[in-house]
Length: 305
Image (tube, rainbow, N blue to C red; front, side):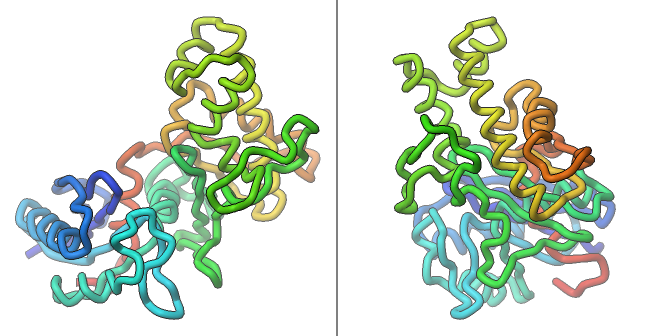
């Protein structure tokens, strides 16, 4: 049988599996609804891997992107919004069922790895992948390898304070983490919607705000401008610290028309340099980046299956 790479994206709503060749060609793809139980999740992942291998007529490594992380102290899942995974040895249980080692990594890191490997940031040495959606997260890839950090929180920029806050931005909205004014409270989809309602008294979805901005609605335009300016400030701090070659925007908010170009312009005044060479780009693989990145968790030549 030929060698393939299998990636699994474990989300709160769906689990998706993909089979890739070494050159990134897709050989199979399947998805199922996520069972909200641990045993059900194990069964679903094993079933998807088996289906992908059958369709691709191959076998190989397995990587899984999860909405959380594995504690280096206990080997158990922590910080997962799919709460039935917390405290479980997910990688060990999957390895036992699949009879091969399984690599797990946070889904934001998988997104960044996908785009750094064969996406919008291919060939770049240092990449920061940004997730702008229901929450705000990120992942760092250096020379083709994800950087996780000592606490496995590298790239978690969403729970830092919005930098250079204006008076009307203090102390900022309350965040579920227990603090106020986190980047996530301003730059998540819900953050934009709350900001628009506070400014206009109108409760609109992000899609309605985007549509209004494109149609010339001045209130929607003002909301988008505030969002972009805040995103520029927040990313400028990351550029000052990490100095990446490329910042890749992902998540539902990245679908805002022209966001990458507008963000590149907005961050420039805040970066500690005379000329910003960091590129800000939209992702290439869209919703597939997470599952593709999970497949790339095993490097070429590594024995993962």
